[in-house]
Length: 249
Image 1 (cartoon, one colour):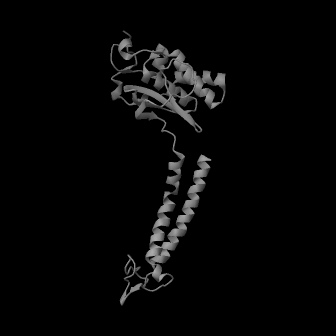
Image 2 (spheres, rainbow, N blue to C red):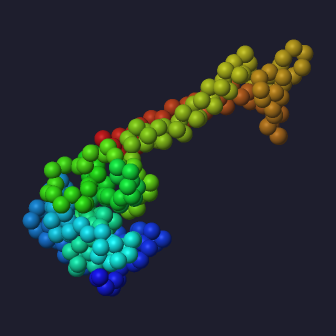
Image 3 (spheres, one colour):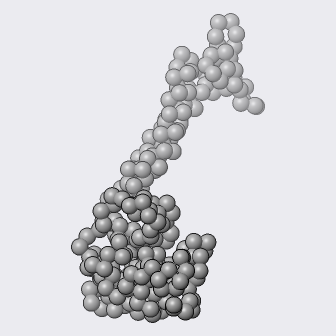
């Protein structure tokens, strides 16, 4: 049975983020060796990191190696031992990828109905699952079928460009929508500066019945407020599109 050294029993109760260590000297050394071989190409760096882990880290269960059902090891310990289970190799690969400047995170969940950990990595518009226990060189991202994520740690996942566009446009849509409602509500009194009238009672037209601005006497109709909001909404929509294009195109 192996000595625990700096490994941690019952890792499930610890903070997984503390096991992702791209600044660790041992991890940095591995990253530097990969960079010296492949240069700046992100795809080559990703496959280099994956191959390093799958070739050099042998899959061994915690029960077999430590005698405990669940033990987490820091990446430098996994490098030293040259073995580990799914979360150990995932923490290590994620750390190396981050040290190489590639976005990555460790994901805990289930694979084919069993508890498992794996890595998700991406650069530009390319990304997917990296199965660290494959013991095979990189041939592409793993088939996501059968993987069910529960929690992820490390870099947040890539944004959905369509959802991001909706977020950028939301303020404009809100202003435009509210302004349109106000304009329609007060359309009968458009361009008038006196109190709205309905029948023989002043200020009873529309849902802002008789609203006045203190000190200004008769209120400016909410039709005017509406058109200002519509104009502001159009400006915000245009600004949102520009900001989205600058980030995603």
